[in-house]
Image (cartoon, rainbow, N blue to C red; front, side):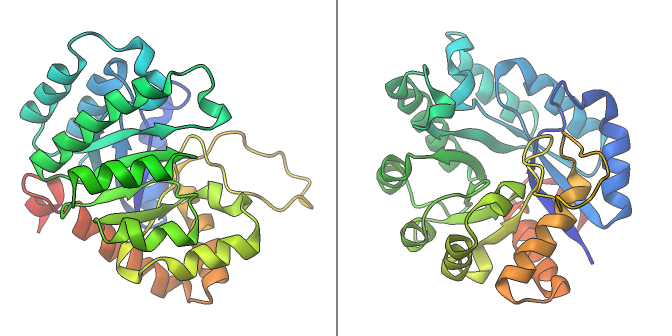
Length: 272
């Protein structure tokens, strides 16, 4: 049973010293690849180096909405340069966040940073990982304006409504579920799952964040950080809610993710 972690942050300072160990642990349970997403100019080099060091890592570069205040005047030119020198890379993590998590971050500034990155992904014909919280109306409007996106838009840790799914799917969106999904009301989660087309379904960990909900009855100490091997817990949870066999869900989501990341220049194309 193969799995593909469609979105994680192994360059995060909380886990970067353990990257090799985390990758080995995940490989041992069937995770073949990791889409490691950069979030700012400060970590793009780390992601690039990780992609060069580990055959299983797909590097991704993008400016996350939480970190736009620290960007340099030439951030977009720098981002383009990273894609020129790293043909294996995809785009991400970019996005829009209108939630309390982004309190104090100018939303009009987010829009100004988001759109050119989405346009760049379209121009490069590469998949792009998008963070979207409480901003789906604006996301849809911008995607309709810039798209469609035959190379794919990954709505990572998707938390939108079932109603918005077909509108986004029509433009080329994929819906990636992480450990965060285990905290959503079960009735809402089931409705969301039913709305996602089977060929647009992905799994991820968003590690080191997004630790799946655990059994509170256990007396064992609870970990505080997530890791790619925990994609198995996401698989178990989603398969159970979907009334699917784990093996079937793994096969579907793995095939979708491999297809999505098999763009020209990708490591996955080179391996075929």
